[in-house]
Each structure stands twice: as structure tokens, then as C-alpha cells.
Amino acid sequence: MATIAAANSLSTNDSWVLNTVFNPENALVQARDLVDDELAPSLPNVTTEQLEAFLATEGEILRSPQQPLLEKAVEQLGQIIAVNPDYASAYCNRAQVLTLLIGDDDHAGQSSTTTTSSPSSDKEPRLVRWADLSNAIRLATPSDANARVSRLHGTVLASAHIQRGKIFWQAAAAARLKQAQKNSGDDPHDLRAVQDMDSEMLEELANREFELAGRYGNEQARTMATLTNPYGRLCGGIGQEAMRADWTVGG
Image (cartoon, rainbow, N blue to C red):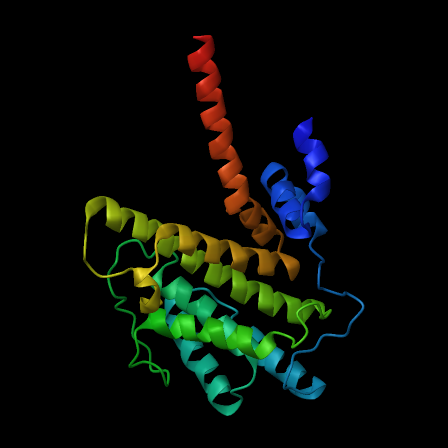
């Protein structure tokens, strides 16, 4: 009971942390959904007419998931990007296609052998994918972090954030495995700069990406944000320790 009374003197941030620990789902529900279905489809840096044409072209490019056509899709999306470098959706879609080509599971730690005739074919596909996701987020993110966006705009941002979150999560798993095996081999993730980060830091980065994707309307990301929430996972660990202590005392 003393804990409840003391909560009145907690800062807003501390109260949020406690709420997240004991009910992480509530924290996500309270996070404002930034998608407004009443807004007309739009993306930054393109006119309505350009957007309609781009979406139609992308729809044709992405029609088939078969590998030969996926490789062609990477090339065609690269052509859109070359002509329209500020069009966020093309970057996001090319990243998705690259994921299908190189495999969503990067745990093998081997460089992809995928080759394309796209303008970026001389680069390692995982690095191209990372750059594409970062560009999509940079181009599509509103200057006001709480700005409402159209469903289409939210879908692009959610897709880019959840893809980047998965990469961070895979990197965290690889970091744990690498530490357990004391292995100094190649890192199986996109961003070489994260190779010095520990698994906890990478998991926090992944959680942040999932939270943002959830705010932009992706329900899978909301679930992932809850499952990867560091405070919620901490609470689970505390609960397990408390149960072990009770069993020891009562034993």
C-alpha cells in the first residue's frame, strides 16, 4: 500500500515507466495513433498526380513474388528512385523486395549472393536495404512528431519502421550468439556500425522502431512493441525472481 501512496510523488516519466512495467499494453494504447483515415492519400515531395502514377507503376512492378521478377523489381524500383529520389515509397518497397531476395533471416552471417542490374548492384544488398529504409523514414517522417498523416503515408512509415525493427532484433540475436560463442566472425546484419552495441541496446532500438510502426497503424508492430518492451520484460524477470524467493522461503 505504501507503494501506491508514494506513486503520487513520482514524476510523469516515472509514472509512465511503472505503468509500462505492470501493463505494457496500456502504454501502447495510450500512445496516440497518428493515422487519420479522413485525410486524402498523400506523401511528401510528390503531387497528387505524380503519386497516382507512381503507385500504379509500383503496383505493376510488385505484382509477382517469384524470384526472377523480384530481381527485375529491384532494378525497376531503382529506376524510379533515380528519377524521383525524394519519393519515399519506392525506397520502402525496394527494401521489402530485397528482404524477399536475401531472406528475412540473416542469422547465417554470410553475404548475400543476390545480384541485380540495378544502379546499386555493386553494393551489398543488406546495406542497400538499410539505406533504403533510412531514406524512406527520412523522407516520409513529418517535421512534427505528432502530426496526423494519411493512411498511405502511415503505411509507408510503418512498413519502414517495422522492417528496421526486425533488422535490429536480428542483430540483437546475433550479438547474443556471438558473445556466447565468443565468435569474431562476420556480422549478419545490415548496419556494421551496430557491431559494438550489446544485445540489450539493440533490443531497445528494435522496440523503438516497433513502437513507431505501431503508432503509424501497423497492428503486428503494436504486438511486437509489447513483446519487446524492455520494462515489461524486466517486470517478467522480477516476477520470476520473486516467485523463486517465495518458493525458497516456503520450501
